[in-house]
Amino acid sequence: MIGTAVVSLPWAYQQAGLGLSLIFTMISYMVCYYTCNLMYTIAKNDPNYETTLKKYFGMPGYIIGLIAPILFCFGVLIVIFIIMSQLLYAIILACVAWIAGVQPLMSYEPTFSTFSPGYTSLMLFVLLFVLCNVKDMAVLNKL
Image 1: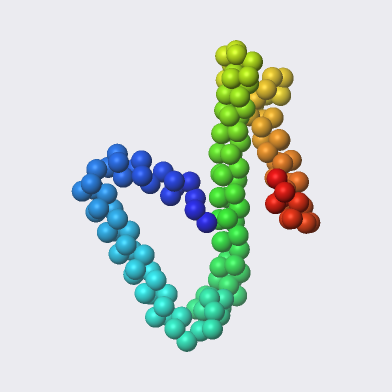
Image 2 (image 1 turned 90 degrees about the horizontal axis):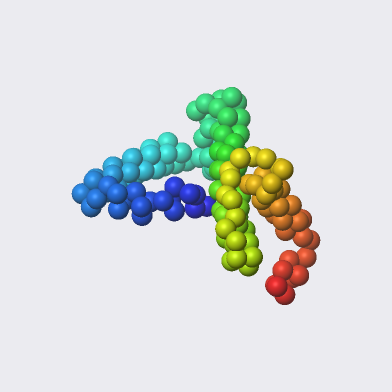
């Protein structure tokens, strides 16, 4: 899964410059390599990650090790949903301005009295809910 941080990396590297970007990349590489090497040497003879968690951290560590990634993915899902809602709001306003030839008032207030990001969040939720509940995916191939 590619998160929003990966999408913003080119901008961050451009702002930091070549030297600082290379330093950050090397530090990131060393931390990732050390972590992977440590996990490999510790769990070398274990059949899976859950067994390693139980062996070294007991049942509480096992449960936390299973729940933490789910909570992390749920947080990422919320952030991506918010970003998609905000982008959809701007896209809809741009389409309205292009079709109607008027300049719409862009407001990020969470109100339902006028068209706002609250409406786009509901529209996006309904759209994603319907798409996720389609039983036969062959219908989507015809689109």
